[in-house]
Image 1 (tube, rainbow, N blue to C red):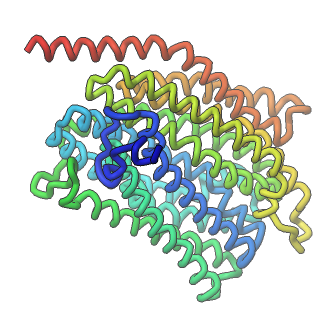
Image 2 (image 1 turned 45 degrees about the vertical axis):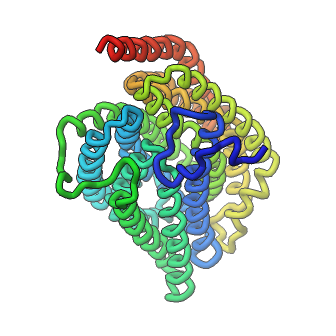
Image 3 (image 1 turned 90 degrees about the vertical axis):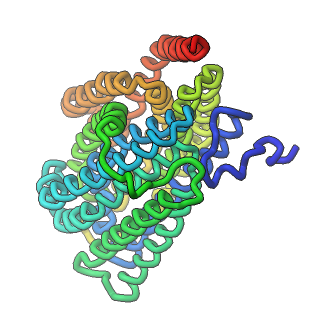
Length: 486
């Protein structure tokens, strides 16, 4: 049987993929592939940043300075990327209901909102960069380099948030391919600029390498923004495009985006706060340990790129079917996604565990600097990867449950689960157990806070999901009854 036979609407992938009809399993796979590739490409370019400063620039300290910003950048940026989930849900529901006018109003409102949020975040982040890093116990020897990178990075945040809002809307309408195209092209530009600045322009020493990779990232994010704007104005779009004559801020549609997006953003913010707390605790072990942790974090990203794609798309799949009153597809969406995540997660986690030392060794290299402890860096990276990589599938299963609830217009529930199982548990774990019990004061025990909280969240979601599935089914039945009455 040919792949075309299994998925007869592959040609729709360029534009608006209808996720309410046909073989849903294969549509989930096909819809996820561009998102997986996009995430892998983004991570590859991040890896190139780290490899460039490691092998051609300042070495381990520069790598630690670039990678040590990760949890803080994620706190700020991912919070607003979480808000973009609201745009995804609203666009998907309007797509399922074939309400083009409302979808286009939501589009223009979302883009204006994204620019406003991005500029505000950029200003706060630029002027507060060094203060934030000190709060995180960033080692003094890399503080200046880390602050330089962070300031330049924040200048690109408006472009980054605009891209993510636009990409979320396209995915909500079933288009996961064109955001991938933008990332491929702009990521290639990023890599090229890294080598041009560091090797061509000689930006290697005295922190110039960190500035170089930050500038390359800034330029590529600006180009991503331009590509998304081009895609959203394409006259060939079957369902959704920017209508400049009606491009303005619509309060009703903007409120719907925020009503769905703010809880999702709060959920991400809650996770990110605990990430910063845990990163701050890890930073107390010194810059050598931070270098190993940075390497592990980058490798973990490749696992999450595959697994999280299915957690991300379930929101679009469920929202489209909820808008189209296809209750039979709601159960299929969650079961298919969870099964795929569990299967891939166990295999990839085992690979990460078995190859943890060679993988960490790609990024961490012996140094002539007597202050750098190569053995400690390798051990810290391998220990973190053993914990985080092996149980990564729990994180994606948790997000899959969350996406189902967001897609059925219950965005506050995941936020409450996150507050209890992530924020409260992790803070308790770090400040009570990790800080006060000597035999838990080590890297493996510190990062164990993550899989334990993921498993707790999955348990709670498993208890809640039957209730909300029944509620969504009743809502759909009520809408169908109302339509028949008319």
